Image (cartoon, rainbow, N blue to C red; front, side, top):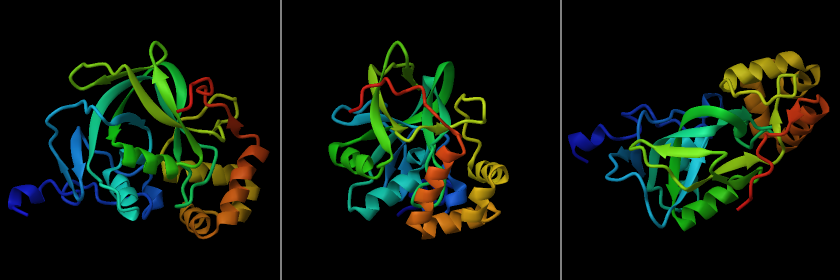
Length: 245
């Protein structure tokens, strides 16, 4: 690897830590702009659209190059993935009503008419798409269509269709029934633990304890997910009407 290439490694770019290994970092570090993930590097892109690949809007750790690399490497799938920054309308980033295997409470898109967010579109080949589908057992991949949603790439080009992963457990709310926005993992877990004695009994009193206990015990994760519903924190995402892949 020459000196120029070394500047494009995930480590050099501050993108090397995967939330799977560092759950309190969820959703992980996102790139500042579009790029081509290729193994341990994030390289410049020569184009923004990629025929033969499926565009997926990422609202959580699928926009983290380190997380994508981790997932692909675990199953021996190519980690060459175009990651394109886009302006997405009609969606915001909510909180999934479940606890994930790595020990964090992940994000899920929520319906947000009129809201625009800068997100990443990851372009997946058929093998990669099948893998990501398999690693998202709590989500349905749904099709985002105009006029309810818009996905505009950096060059102003609008995608006619794109997908997103929506949690089928529902999403969390603050208490008023409206889906809450994801504030980041540490802030979220701190708030949830403060609101529930039962949750503290399951997972301890700090975000670190929560992640450690959740990561180590599948049964505890199931109990915690069930507790979200018992505490009446769960509501609809506003995207239930969308067509599942």
